[in-house]
Image 1 (cartoon, helix red, strand yellow):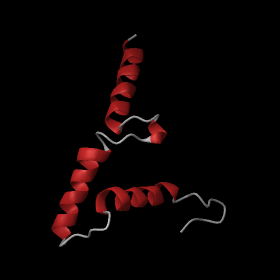
Image 2 (cartoon, rainbow, N blue to C red):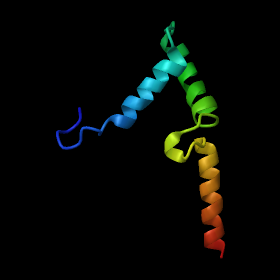
Image 3 (cartoon, one colour):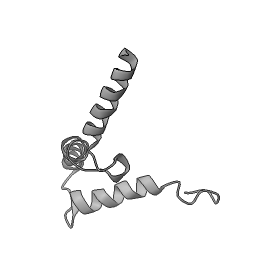
Image 4 (cartoon, rainbow, N blue to C red):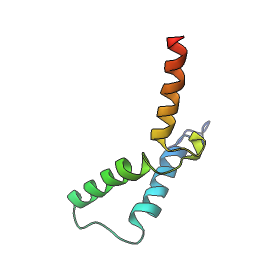
Length: 79
C-alpha cells in the first residue's frame, strides 16, 4: 500500500504486473505452478532482459544498457 505522501510508490511494480498480464498471460492461465515458474523465467530471462525495450533506459534492452554503461565506466577508470 502506498503512503499518503507518495502515491507513486508502487508504480514500478504495478507496471510490471500490467506488462506480465498483457505480454505473458493474455487470456490464458497455467496448468500448474511448475508451468508458471518456467514461463515466467523464460519471459524475464529470454525476452524482458534481452529484447524488450525499456523507456526508462532510453528505449534499450537492459542487456544493451548494461554493456554500454560498463564500457563507458571502464574507459573512464582506465584513463
